[in-house]
Length: 465
Image (cartoon, rainbow, N blue to C red; front, side, top):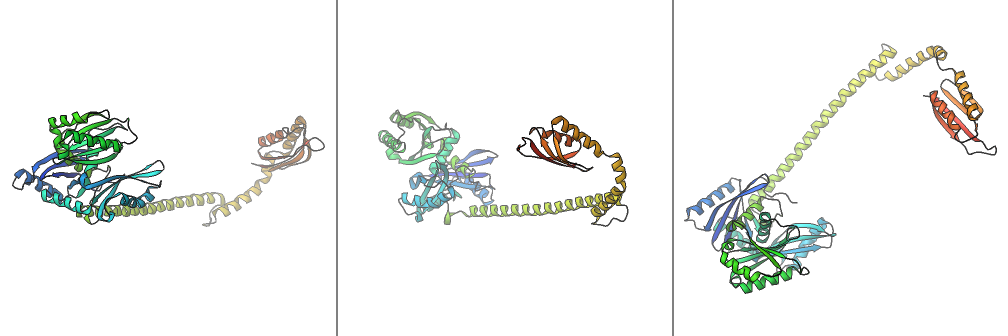
C-alpha cells in the first residue's frame, strides 16, 4: 500500500471537463471519511459569476497550499493492461515491468507516461496493473483543464476513478462481476471488474452508442473477449455519468442489453458529479494511487510536497537520534549511581568483617583474610559442636547392613564423604546417595555393571553443601 502523495492536504478540487463544460467538486477528508460538495456545473464561461467564483476559490486555496486539484485522462486516449511477470519477487518484477509494457503498447514506451498503481503477488508470480498515455495526449489534457478551469496537480485515470468510486458507493461482493457504464456528453465509458480490482476499460463514441442494437452488440463482444472461460458468470450493470439521468435513453439501452449474461441493472446517485467526486476523493486517498503526471510533467506542488515529506522524515530521524543519545546518557548516569551504591554497600560489609582501614578495591580480599583467621580460631568449637564423623560413620554402616552393601574403603571428614564398595542390586546403591543428601553432602555416585562376583561396584564422593 502506497502512502498518500498529498499528506499535508485534506481538501481537493475534482474537475471533470468535457466538450467545453466543466463540473467541479470540492472534497474534504475528515479522519476516515470524505465529504463532497459540488461547487459548479456548466460551461466554462468567465462571464458567469458562478464559474468565476468557483475557479477563484479553488485557485486561492491551491495557492495557499490548502488544497490540491485533480482531473483524469480519458480512457479513449490511454491504455490499461494487466501484466504478469515470471518472478515471485515484487522488487525483481518492478525492474521488468516497463519492458513487458513496452511490448504491448502501440507506441514506444519512451514517448508515454506510465505508472503501475497495483502490483500484487499471485500464485508464485506477480501481477501488475499498467496505465499508460502518450505524452502528447497528456500535455493536451493538462492544457484542456487549464483553459477550461485550472491545471491539475494530479492526473488520474478515468477508468480507475470510475471503478473505485462505483465500488465505494455500491460495494460488490467478492467475485461479483460488474460493468459500470459512465454516460458522458460525447461517449460512454465501460469499466469491467470484480470487487478485487478493475479488469478492463473501454470507450464507445456516442454516435455508435445512439444505435442501441450496435451498442449492445459491442458490449457483448467486449464481455465475450474479457470473460473468456467464464461463460457462466453473471454480470451486474450499473449506470452513472450525466447521461444516466435520461431515463428514456437508459431504458432503451437496457432493453437491447438484456441477456442471460447481464443479470441486473442499477443506477448510481448524483451522477452529474460522479467522475469529479471520484478524482477528488482518490487524490486524498491511498487506495490504488495513480498520478500520470510523471517525469518532466510532475507538478511543482507535488515536488514541494515530496521535498517537505523528505525533510519531515529527516527531522524525525534526527529527533529519534537525539532521543536515543539522551536515553544513553541517562542510562549511563543510572548505572553510575547503581555502581556507587554497590561500592558503598561492599565497603560497609567489608568494614563489618575486617574493621576500619579497608582499602578501596581490596574489600573482598581483606574480608576473606579476616574470615579465614576467624575460622581458624573457631575451628575447635566448630568441631566440638558440629556433626560428629562417628555419627556419619554409624549411619553409613546401618544403611550398608540394611541394603546389603559392602564397603572396600570409607573416608569421613567434616567437609567430605568418600566410599567405595559393592551392592547386590543396581538400585541399592541409591540408598547411600539418599543418606548423603540427608547428612548435608552433595552426592556424586558412579556405578559399574556387575562383574564376575555378580555384584554392582560403585564409587561415591560427596562434599559438604
